[in-house]
Length: 370
Image (cartoon, rainbow, N blue to C red):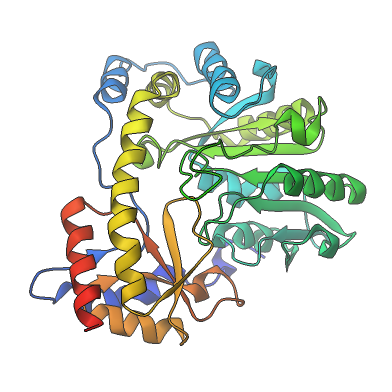
């Protein structure tokens, strides 16, 4: 199978609903894709600008300063002390890493890639690209012995569910039992909302409480797109098993998967500045507090959604019917069909809209219920 054999890009199917929503007299409220709308922090933009004399090829492995910043960030923000620079690697955004990881690990026909039951579509795309089989399963007991790569996602996209330390420990133990690499997509880990994640950090798969001192077979994947509004920079990284990191580094060198030099400089600064992350979280907290009760007032039930950037909701009918109703209100959301076959009656609402647009969506949703 090749890239040309992948199915039509799912978001293209939303275009007719977007057109209808855009015809609303007060304009569209786009809560679909989840692309940040807030400004990139000035300190990060300044670092990028100062690094634009980028005449030499960038280092695939990352600059020493960036690698040290990633190590320090894991210790400070994720409760993972003791990483070395040989255990981290920058990537050109997290999506390319997610989609290419089966290829970079040498998977192929006959292998199995496990993904969550509610899954970001790029996990399956990466498996299909190499001819591997995809299995949807959240419970480690259901992971087949033929699995060679297991994706877990905490907080989940789209469902906002969080795996606690005990759940992560069980996942790592099962992956090691069957000889699979376990990769944790943790891109929303700074965005905890409901108890206990409103008061304690969301655990990382590399947390010593999960893996002890042994990172073998374990990878953590992270992106600065959401917490720092760097989606346009394509700024992400991975950490974990040093042997896996070395293998991935070699493959990425051959393929030219290098983060541009100015972006590496910007990432270094972003990782060292926690203040802008706290400000951005407060913006999302405010938007969530406005949007959540309005969604519920409009007849939707929220599931999961205790963390992350989305509200995962159902009104008990097919998601395309819900999108139809929302389009008449000038609101665009994401159908549950995009995230696997198990949630056809769910829709995903993103918090990535301006305060004014979130307020408008809330007003329309409340009005629709009266």
